Length: 206
Image (cartoon, rainbow, N blue to C red; front, side):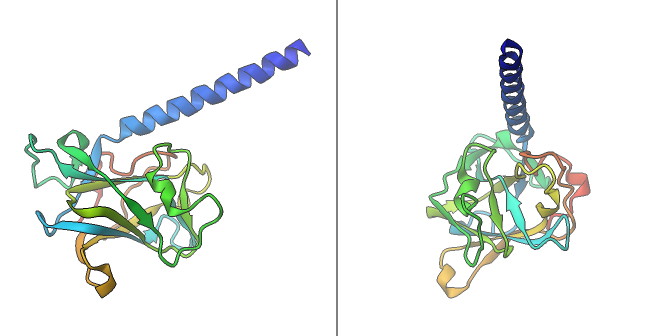
């Protein structure tokens, strides 16, 4: 009985260490952001992220763990020639709400999970629809990043191509393209990790 209790305690410790390590690695990986290339200086209340291809092109599902937007810090001089930039040059943009119009989400896997500080939750959509973010008021969007979900064997659901758009009147259908990933981004298969991690030479950002 004592041996069984010791094994259970050891298992709990190992799981806790693993989760803490993964979380720390994920936060450490957030050293870069994707830069928005078009309509610089324009403020938008809404942003729309649409996955145009997943790692497995035949996957009927898209998922991610986190999403974050950034604006250039007032005291930083960002090199506009870079396509993936160091996160220290930015400060986060507060997101008031997020929706997944037309999405088909399992229980507890809705779009609100991409705003969760814990990388252990995720958003999943069986219709591969967009994420629409509301900042509450027009905001500058200079960069963004997103993190892979926690499913160990589901990396085929990761976005590898996408389009980010901004709007102040989404009901009119008017959206400006802010950044578009036209070639496959080399999203690593590590789970709960940020997508922009400084391999810009292998990305085809437009």
